[in-house]
Amino acid sequence: MRTITDLVRPAVRRQRERAIVARPWQARLTRWGWFVALWCAGVAGTALLALPFKLIIASAK
Image (tube, rainbow, N blue to C red; front, side, top):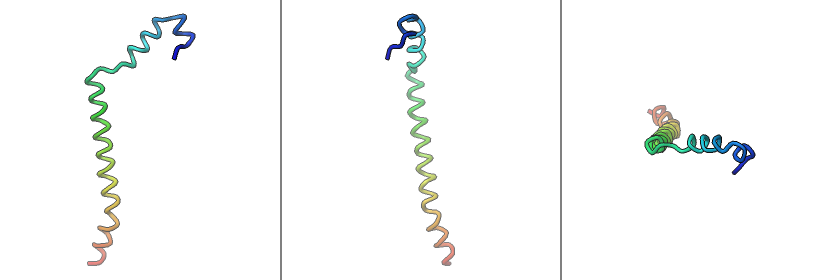
């Protein structure tokens, strides 16, 4: 989307566009970071979901 700043000062737009473009290794690192974060959240969620059952079994003994 073009703004008035883009029309008056095109160098600002070029600088902003260059800042947005990520290097390939940064994009790959970001994707792996999301994968690891979501995997950890899944493991933690599974552990919390299983905890009540573990406590019920432990109390029955």
